[in-house]
Image 1: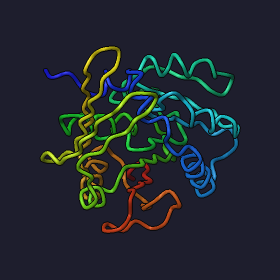
Image 2: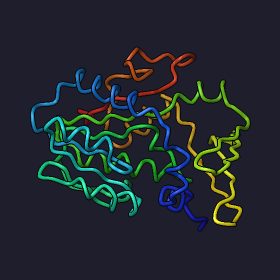
Image 3: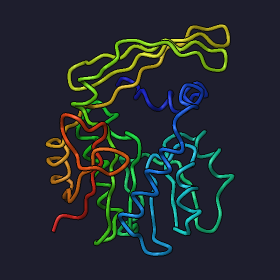
Image 4: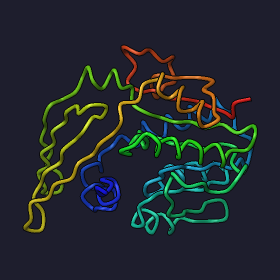
Length: 244
């Protein structure tokens, strides 16, 4: 089988170099606004699914919630574990596999950390694992890009120079995926990585969630939580719960 692209790329130091200037203030503002809408109980159990190096897990734990961060990257989790405390823990884990049963009040999957797999059945396995982990009254929040918005505004190529490394980036559509080819030189070598994300629509998610035993109860279109509009919204943020 072809190796899964994200396993090497997310564990690479160059991934973190390329994305080191993400807008962290906007991200934390989004999380705070989301919490203000959801009103979690004090000490609610929260899973941060695909937590990266744990920045947002830490942000949630600082508010008093019991937070569990999961990520496939061993390097990310090794880094994140230095911040563990009584209400914050991290584990290396594949999101396709269940992690605890009927345990979490909220499961968060932020910043397009979904749709990476070659086969849709793997995405469905992820959603079924989410359903397993949620308490009967729990909520799942999935933050994805709006595929229509991405397609309409796709940038063909760009160059970024960060920490002395020149990243050449090319984006293109390939069937049901948007792909990003990343080429650069480092340590005397020419390196190449590829990102690939499935162009799921709201209809796709409704079908997959239904099959996984979940139902979408609310949608938002950006990090200010404005209503979702297929043509103009940059994000597709889904709130879901167990189907009754």
